[in-house]
Each structure stands twice: as C-alpha cells, then as structure tokens.
Amino acid sequence: MNKVLIIYGTRYGTTTTVVQDMSNTARELGAQVEVVNLEKGTPHPNPEEYDLVIIGSGIQAGQWTKRPLKYIEQNLDSLSKTQVALFVVSGYAGDPEKVDEAQTEYLDKMPEKYPGLSPISTALIGGMFEFKNYNVVVRALVKSMVKKNMPPGEEIPEKIDFRDWDMIRDWIREIVQ
Image (cartoon, rainbow, N blue to C red; front, side, top):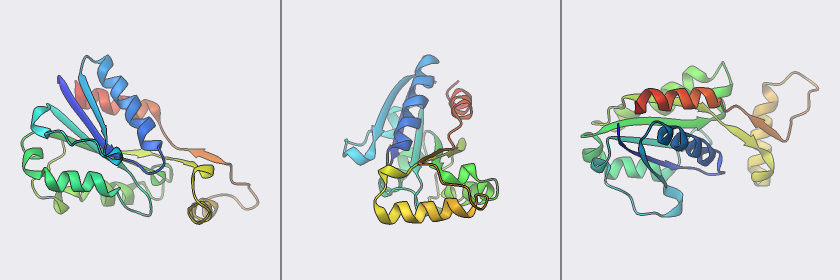
C-alpha cells in the first residue's frame, strides 16, 4: 500500500495526536501519507487518488464531528471505489461496559448510514480527557460521567488517558501492509 490519506475531525486535539502517531507508523512502513484535519478548512483531496483512505473522528456527546461525516457524504461514490478504514477516538473505549455499544454505534453502523461505504477495518481508540481544555459546562458534564465509574471518595484526576499506543500502531500496520 503506497499512498494513504488520513482525514479526520477533532474537537479538543486528542484525535490529532492519535493521527500523528498513525501517520508516523504508516511512513515507517514506506507509505506516502497525507494528513488532513477537516477542522482547518483544508481542501478535500479526491479519495480515488489513494490506495487507502482512513477516516476518523473524535466522539463527543455520542457524535462524530460533522466534517468527516460531510466528507463521507460528498465523496461516497469515490470512497466506494477505494479501500477505506474508519476509526473513532472515544472515552468509551476505556470503559469495558461501553466498548461493544460504542463499536456498534460509532463504527459498525456506518455502512447502514452510508450505503456503498465498505470499511476494510475499523478501530475504536481510547480517548483522553484533559479537563482544562473544556469549557465549564463540558467539564462538569464529562466529570460527572467519569465520576459514575469511579470508586466512592476517589478524586477525579485532571487528565485521564485511555489511548493504547500499541493497539493504534498494530492497527495501522495491519491495514497499511
């Protein structure tokens, strides 16, 4: 696999750090990698120019960011003619009780929502909560969700990181080789 496009959306930057690691891993395998953060308003490349298109998003409030979904909608015909992989970065990946539900809702249902989209692989990647990056309302909401899964009396740390770098690199090696 020579030419890889990683195109994604993020809200707070966790997905960007994941994508940076993905692109480095793919380059180590000899792939030519182009990375596009859709939140920056960069022109959208034609998916047919790539051997593999990896599309991803951070998840917040149970939703993909809007721009990757719009990219899929606008390029569905082209995406059906190339290999596509999907990933999401979500705190639910760090919650054993929510993993299956998150995989189903955020990844497995995508072909139903976008007929013609046939991912060769998907990855549910753990997210990171860095509370200082959130506004007051989001911070309170996320902390209340985190608190439900903690033992009584335990303090919520300022940063909770569920990213599994080995899993991310292994997934990229699997789909790029």
